[in-house]
Length: 79
Image (cartoon, rainbow, N blue to C red):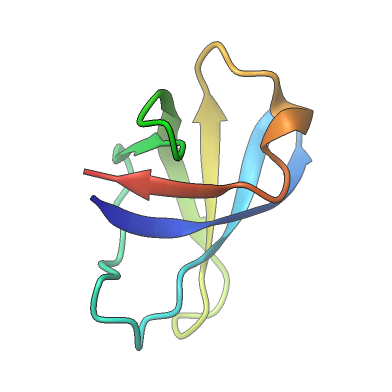
C-alpha cells in the first residue's frame, strides 16, 4: 500500500488532495482512475483529475459512498 496524499478540502462533490511528497520512496505518482483507500483499507473513490504544478500536484477524487466532510484531513492510500 502506498500513500497518495492528504485531503485538503472538498469542492463540487470532490475530495481535493495535496499529493504526497515525491521525495518519499513509498510515493508513486497516481494516475486518473486509481482507486484510493482510507487507513482502514475501505475504498473511498477514484482519482478523476491531476492538476497544479508538476512538482507539487493536487488530485481530485470522486467519492463512492463516503461522507465528504469526514475525509478532510485524512490520508488516503492506493494499492
